Image 1: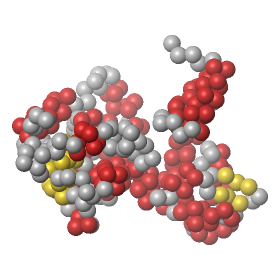
Image 2: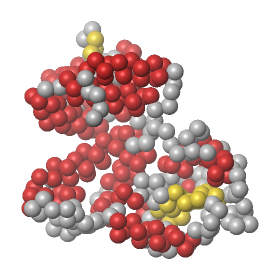
Image 3: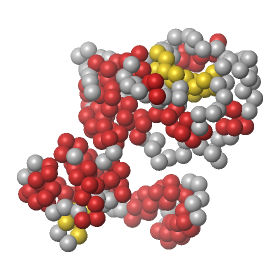
Image 4: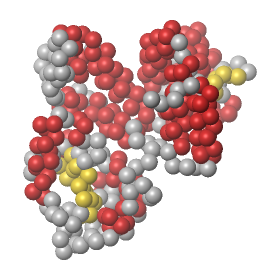
Length: 329
C-alpha cells in the first residue's frame, strides 16, 4: 500500500519538484499526481462533496457559458492590464452583477486571478482560449456530461448489470433513447458535434508526450530504417485518425523528408471536412476500418485511441480486417 502520510507526500513533492526543475521526463505528471494525493490525504468528506458536487460542476457550467461570451479570449487580449468587471461586462454583454458572481467562482477555482479591482488571465485560461479547447469545452459539456449524469438512472433500470452495447449505453440513454445510434453516427447526425469531437481529439493530447517524440519511441531505428519501397511505398497509415491531428504533429516532428507515403484514413464524412488537404504532407483516404484494409504491406499501421472505443468483439473485427494487409518486418 502506498504511503499517504502528509509528511512523506511533501517529501515526495520536493523530490519531484527538483526533477521538474531539471526538466526530467514525466516529472510534471508526477507532481500533478502527488498534488492530487496530498489533497486526498488532507480533504475531509464535507470538502470532497463541496468540491466534486458543487464547485467543479459549477466550474464546467461557467466555462461553457464563457465559450459563448469569448471570456478567455477577452482576458487574454487584455494582457497584463486585465479588465474590470464593468469592462468585461461591456465586452461579453453579461450583466455586471451576474458576471461578478460567476467570475468570483473562477477566481476561487484558480482559473483566473483578481488583483487591484481587475480580473486577469492565467496561463491555463489563455490555453483554454484556443479554438480547439473552446470546441472541446462545448463537446464535453453538451455531449459527454449528459451521459455521465444519466449513469444512476441508466444502470438502476438495468439492475446494475454490465449490459452496455455500442447502441445501448448511458450515451444513448441521454441523447437518443427513442432511436438509438452509435456514438459516431449520432455525432454526424447532430452537427456541429462531429467537428467539436474532432477538435476534442486534437486537444486532449496537447502538451503531452506523443509516441513519435524523440526520446520516447525510436522512430528512426524502428520505422524509418529498414523501410523498403519495393515492399510498399507507404511508411505509415493512421487508421481512424480524424482530421489528421496526429499526422500533422508527426510531420512537424520528423520533417517532410522521411521516406514513403503517409496516409490518413477515416470515414468519408470526416475526410471530406478537411478543407486544406492539398497543403498536407499526407494523403487522406476514406476507409471504414470494419472492412478489409485496402493498402497492403505498409511499414506501420497506427490505431491511436481506437480500440478503447469498442468492445472486444468489435475490436477483434477491426484487427481481423487489418490482419490480411500485414507483412512481417
